[in-house]
Length: 328
Image (cartoon, rainbow, N blue to C red; front, side):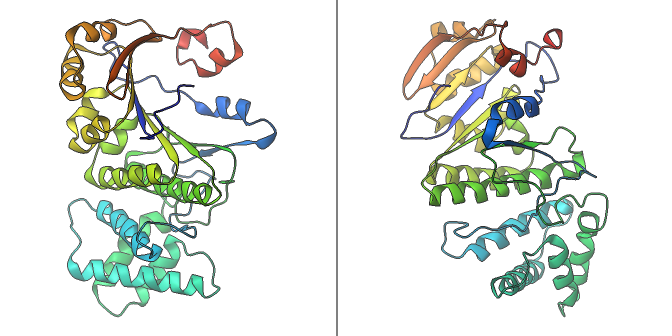
């Protein structure tokens, strides 16, 4: 494993697709189960109808940076509502109602009640006297009592395992944004707990470009990325769709602020954009032009270093990591 520069704990890995439209999807479950050992590894499959549930309203002690975790959790819930209906922006009144109801359900929890869920929040919205509250409660229906209620139940998986995979391969388009928001929030909770214990957390996000497909998940994730770095976590983003990443101003800023970047084979258009963004010379770019598997460039601080890191295919670890159908 290549460790990042200690001063800025974040690192993207950019992989070329060689003209393919679809990425090679790696099922990380086998790898995690093999590496878990006596400490265990947990694979959490997030999809409509899944038996694995992550409570969107979970909140650990120390959540957020403002000193008032309920306020920051309210902002997270607002981001969920914003993406339920992309054709409707929340009014000032609706935002106030949501903020008030979020405060109420956490007040009840802090006084000895059960951990709130989206169902708890929906019930609180229905008790609110303003007429707009009923519309907000109805907007949650699909995600509380409908087919997309995977985030409306108490968490029923082991989120304290040393190794955790959030598998979103079967996450439908309707759940994608909400799923990314909830999973990112769950990672914030775990990073916060580890930070308080003096532990470092490593976060690997494959298909990294997906979190930048809309403003809601993009803005929330950019904020989470900063929190990760503040709390002794090392987030790593991995993508084959570099052009989509470069289309996002937020993603470009994150890339330019990263101290450790690995670049494998890149298309001509992506090479040109990366050269401008990262100040890479034409000679250096030749190392990511038709590069073989395991070869490319590393940017470490201001240094650009070519590398060759071929992996022996006759090993158990290779068989767990490979995405080539011919190797399966």
